[in-house]
Length: 211
Image 1: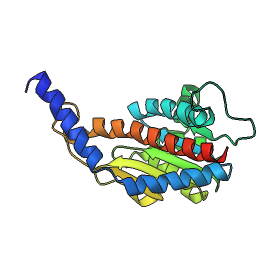
Image 2: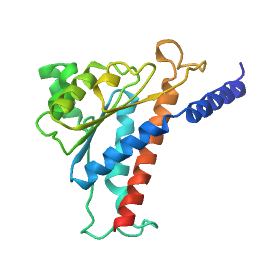
Image 3: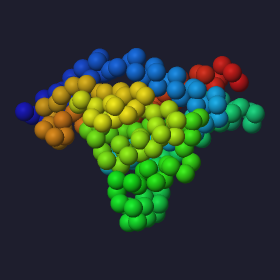
C-alpha cells in the first residue's frame, strides 16, 4: 500500500471505531464523575506507556477547563467547587521508588491505597485489560468502596470483571504498528483522549449550569 492508501485505511478504521463507540457506557461514567464531583471526591487515574502520558492531558483538562469562563478570560468564582484529579503516573520518583521497593505490580495500588475512599472515582486505561498493576489497583479501589471505570479493548480482560463500568473499544486493525498482539492500539489511544474531552465538556456544562 502507498502512504496515502495507509492514511485512508487508518482514518476509515478510526471512523468505524467511532461509529461503534459504546455511548451508554460512557454516559454511565459521566454519571459516576458527577457523583464524585458533587460529593467532593477525588478522581484517580492510571495507565501504562503512552496512555500514561495522555493522563497529563487529563490532569490539565479536568483540573482547570470546567472552572473557567467560556471565553477563558477568568476563573469561575472561588465558591464554585473544584474537582481534584490525581494522575497515579505523575511522579517518576514515586513510581520508580514503589517499583524498586514493592515491584511493578504494586506500584499503582501502593500509591492509591492510603488515600482512596468511597467518594472517589478510579479510572484505569489498559489496552489488554490485564495489566497486573492496573488490575491490582482496581482491586484496591473496589475494596475501598470507590467507583471504578476501566477503558480497554479486545475482550476487556480482568478489568471487565473488576470495574463498575468497563468501556471496551471495539474493532480490529490492518494498519502497521497496531496489528497482532497490538491490535487496534492506536485507535484505543485516540479514543482515550476523546473520552477525556467528552467527560470534561460534560462536567463543564454541569458546573456552568450550577454556577
